[in-house]
Structure formats: structure tokens, C-alpha cells
Image (cartoon, rainbow, N blue to C red; front, side, top):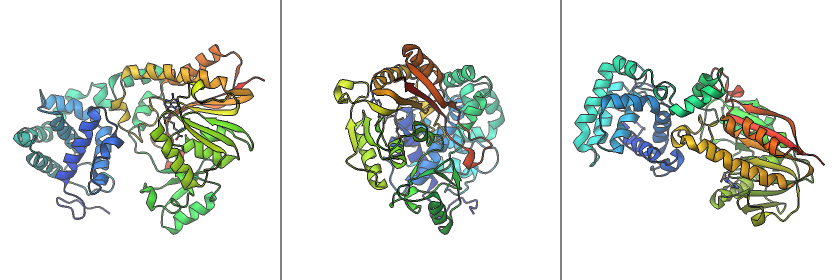
Length: 445
Ligand SMILES: C[S@@+](CC[C@H](N)C(=O)[O-])C[C@H]1O[C@@H](n2cnc3c(N)ncnc32)[C@H](O)[C@@H]1O
């Protein structure tokens, strides 16, 4: 149980965590992913910095709007980031700041003091520590008026860019608020059991022996009661399971590979669905990815899971450039888990909404159509192609599938979930999943 503490033992000083989190947020404002920006943080500071910066991403729209009320012109992006991170910790009304996983409960005045200490200890911020102190204290004093001043801003209210809120409002007149709220609910840790190495009952028993709460989900999933670093869970090194959202676990099941099939995983890295396909059947598999570095992670994952073999061929290539990689032999089943805006997995990657730009949606949809049209040529008569995105924008989902059918009248649409909206709000961990789009096409023979 955590207790309120102004100077917690074991935890790194809050001033250091605030400063490193501000550095991470500065990176995201500059276009870096949260994961990439966090990789610069020392291992001693990383868990707390991750907790604070993930939280900051979830309330950045609100903090940005309040920050604009407090400051006319920021002296630097690092100052802005430190102010925004501190505001997100003070967001909840009351004497205590937000409580984040693995961190003590800090008093609101401690957050202010520690933010000012962070500024004092940083050469480029030291001369602005008075300004920071004044902003944060004014926020504590005038919270109600400041919150009222930003209440009409969609960014402040929904913590997503305004264009994003608008697009979801048009696409889902009934569900858009739920989608946006779900995106701010931290995701549970969901695993998929590697049935080549363990049964789900074995995994559940091992977790129970280790004192961990876990329950089954879907055909092969296990969801944990509370997240833990994966390397500390039983069976990681043994390859008993992989981390995979419950919604993502449907992909390989829908494509339904059978023994002896020739299968293509066209956008495979880091290999979550590649491994699942290999767990389900003895197949000959070609796994492509345009990004050679990410493809190395497919190799590492298959090694850990005991799934690498001479029946699996990995290749770094643009899936749409058939001349570069295809030998002309058709595939019985093709998985097209194409690059997308990732708008359906914001609760796991809360930075995504701030990294995307409005014109990314159309640009990405154009790339998806190009990849899809090329991959269709590689499908054998009577074969299947599963189109997947982890997006909630219809232009990458339902509309893309419809336009594909118009371009390819020989494609027959089979049963698949279509748009799977994210479920997180008011749902048990076992009911939760990210947002995906699934369309399954058969090529008439
Ligand atoms: C949604 S992710 C795939 C996730 C993966 N299927 C899994 O389950 O772990 C999309 C992948 O497509 C890759 N990609 C982007 N453009 C591509 C292209 N033109 N050809 C092949 N792969 C591409 C990206 O590098 C990225 O790894």
C-alpha cells in the first residue's frame, strides 16, 4: 500500500523524474515517439519517468490549454514541457497529486516545489524558476477559473487533437466519446499462450503459484490483474507466451492457416502475428517488412518462442514492390497487417495522437491501397487475404475495404468482424481490447 510522502524512500527524487519526463515530452513535441524518447533516460529513472510521461500524454491537451492561459510565450520547449508535465500531475482536484503506478502519492505542493527545484538545477531553466513557480501556484489558486476558460476546447476536454475529435464525431455519432475516453484508460497486460510450448492451464497455474492474478481471454489469451515487467513473469524466457492485445489475437485465428499452406505475412515486424500463425499450423511462411531493423525483432521473437525453422523465410522488402521479393509462387493465405495511423491503440501508445497530423490519415490510406492491390496479385485462386489495421478511422477500414472490392470484383468478402472499436471504459480486463479493422477476402478460383 502506498502512503502519502513528501520525501519517499526508494523512489528517485521527484525533481529528477519531472525533469527527465519533461525531456521526454519535449522529444514527443519534437516528433519523437515516447518509446524512442524514453530510451535516452537512465535505467534508474526510467520506470518513474515512464509512468509520469505516459500520464502526461493522456492529459496533454488539457495541460496545453491551461498552459496557454498561464503563459503568453514560453521561454523554451523544455520549460513548456516541464510546466505541462507538472500540470498533468496536479490535474485532479485536492491536496494530493495524481497517483501513478509504482510511485508514491505526492502532495500537490510537493509537485510544485520539486518542479521549481528541477528548474533551479538545470542551467537553461534556472533563470525561469520564478516564472514556473508563479504559474504553478496560480494554477493551484485559480484552478476553477482556468478550467472554465479552457472547458470549450475539444483538445482540453478530450485530450486528443481537435481534427481527431472531429473525424471520430463524424464517423461514430453514437460512440465517439466512448472511443476517446477508452483511449485514456491504461491497458491491461494481455498475453497469448504459445501452444507449441505450453497450455493455457499451465501458464495460469504458473502465474497463480507466483501469486499473480490472471484469467483466460479469447482462444489463447491470458490477461493479468495488474501489469508487471514481462521478464519477471513465469515462462518468458521459456517462450510460453507473447504479449499481444486480445483484439490483435483475432488476426491469425481469422486467417486460419492449415498444415502445409504457403502463407505470406506481408508487414510482419515485430512478429506478434507471425508467431501466432506459426503456433497454429505447420506452414511455409514468408515474413516481409520494409524496415530491416524491425525485422530483426521478428527473428528474435521467433527464436525465443522456438518457432524459427527452415520453413520460415524473412525478407526486408517493400510489400508493394513485387519484383523485389516475389518469386511468382502464389500464397494460400496472405496477412496484410498494413502500416496505419495506429489510432486504435492509443491507450497503449498515448503519444500517437500527438504525433499524427491530419493529412497522415489520407496519406496512410493511399499507401495501404497500394500495398493491398499488390498483395492481391500474390493470392492463389481460392486463397484468402486478411486486411488488418489497428485504426478507428473508416478511411483506413470500412472505406478502404469497400474501395478494394470496387477495384477487384473477383474478390469475395468473407465473414470477419469489420470495425472493432476499442473497449476499455467500464469493462473488466478480460473484456478489454484495442481498436482494429478486419476484412477477409477470398479470391474466386
Ligand atoms: C502494424 S505493423 C505490423 C505489426 C505486426 N504484423 C505484428 O503483429 O507484430 C506494420 C508494419 O508494416 C511495416 N511496413 C510499412 N510499410 C511497409 C511496406 N511498404 N512493405 C512492408 N512492410 C511495411 C512497418 O515497418 C511495420 O513493421
